[in-house]
Image (cartoon, rainbow, N blue to C red):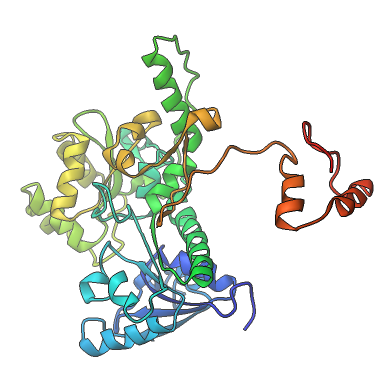
Length: 418
């Protein structure tokens, strides 16, 4: 046993990018037990795998440091085994669609009957609440939602995924989730009380757009007060030559209202669901899909057909249809459009401008009990004496000696030396 989290045990049930949450915990020394469905298991092992590889780089990256056990949670015996695992764990991490474990009788309340202080953390695309919580989604969709991957011109001028997208949601979301789990475990060990963490990868992407979102909100406030606002030209992206510009079933499409959606029907089931939903079951027949990860690269004939189809509905209509018919269709936001998004409005917590100078979006970590608002950012050394006195318990004489040795540098302006 070694590492900062030695002695911490976490049970993970996750697929794809949400694996990254427990990757961070395992990197810090936690014992992560990965529960997988017999058979396919976590199919991240095959996503992006080249013919010369036995498993994908993503699997090597996100699942490192873990132990794997196969349990069929559809069986009563599997549920009992999982409960036994949870009884000796610090946390259970669910990286699936909202409520997946609860539907197996393994939700937070079920697990806390065997482990009252258990931390239950969920990480998924759009979180456990809000109008988009049931939206099927993939990695770039979270950056599209956050305005971090605006469409660029592609073939025939069609809106396309930019070359230099960041995949912020799938990277930052698990990291914030890991921080929330560690803090919740610490709280549980101190108080014996449970905690619930709700982490959305889309929330993390939106937070990484915080400067633009806050600026857009401030601009709206000034305009509402009748002030003249001169806008600087928005930063643009050069059209890229990345293969994503030629993707067809994983691509931006322009809607009837001039806004965009990122369509991501790269799995066969989503592709067929789309064709049925738009009254065109012939399309999946004429352009059949592989089971997973089939983007139909370079098929401009199909893309032209999809351009016409997506131009028949507004963005909100496509989003609603995607959720009701079960195919990924994420709103792609540019500039301040995110401020109007109903999911953003429902999920985002703002810090008051009165305290911080401008309105800031708070951490995307959602917990029960809720997190308090942080106070403003301090000036340099503002709380040095407070920490020395109240946290470390240093007396005036010791602080004076350390200050004499210039351990803390100059005393902060306005402070009273002891």
